[in-house]
Length: 292
Ligand code: ADP
Ligand code: MG
Image (cartoon, rainbow, N blue to C red; front, side, top):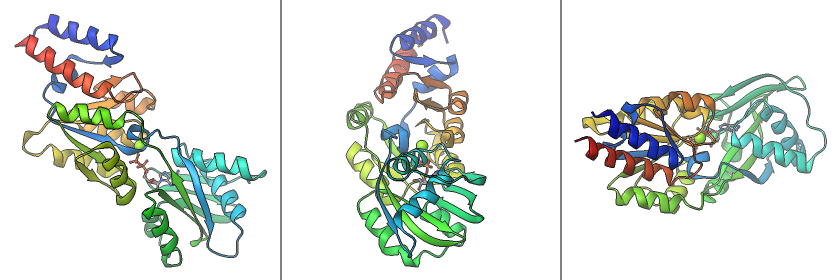
C-alpha cells in the first residue's frame, strides 16, 4: 500500500471528525460489507427515562424505587442513570447499599438494609432463580410498549417492575439508509429484549436483529457474521461492547464511548453522529481505490 494515499485518507478523516488510529484500520474499512450496531447509546440517545414503576407486593411503589436506586448507585449503565434520576425527583432519601456486584448486560446486585437486592433484566432474574410468574403480565405490558423492563427483587422475591423508555437518535434512519445505499447489510446487536430491539430496528430501517445477547456473546455473533470471509464492522459505545469491538474487522467507537471501548477499536469516531459511520466507509473505499 502506498503510504501517501493512506496519509491523505487519515488527514481527510480527521477533518470529518473521524480519527483513524492505524493504516490497517483504514484499509480494512474499505472491505466492510456488514455493519453491526449496538442499540443503547449507539442507535438510541442512551438518555433513558423511567416510564413507570409498578409494585407487585404490598410494598409501596416509592419503596421499590428507593431500594432500586440504592442498588443502581453501583452501576454506570443508562438504566441506572434513569432510575437514579427518577428517585431524585420522587423521593428524598435513597438508602446506602454495600457489596455491589455489576453484571454487564444483565443488572446489579447489592445489599440494602441487610437484604439482598437484585435489579436487572428478566433474563438476569431467571439466572438468579427469581420466580417471575407473578410479574409476567407486568413484563408483557412493558414489552408490548417496546420498553426496556427492569425487575426489582428483594431476597429472591420480586417486588416491582420498572419500565424504561429510550428514544432513537434523530439521524439514525438516515445514517442507516446511507449505509444501505453503500450496499452494506445492517445488523442490530443488543442485550435488550426482542420486542424493544425490533421496534428500534424497524424505526431505523435495519435488516437483521440479534437480541437478548449477553456482552460476552456479542463477540460470538460477530464471528458468526464473519463466516465465509465477510468483513464486519461493529459500532458501539459502552464498556459492554469492548469485546465485540475487538472481535470485529473494524471497531467504531462513538465519541461518548468509554476509554476501554476506545482502546479496543481500530478506528475511533470522534464525532457523536451516526453519519460518521457511512462517511468512514466511503473514505476508506476511496482511499483503497487510490492505492490500487
Ligand atoms: P445494549 O446491548 O442495548 O447496549 P446492554 O447489554 O447494556 O444493552 O444491557 C442489556 C439489558 O441488561 C438492559 O436492557 C437491561 O435490561 C439490563 N441491564 C444492564 N445493566 C443494567 C443495570 N445497571 N440495571 C438494570 N438492568 C440492567
Ligand atoms: Mg450499549
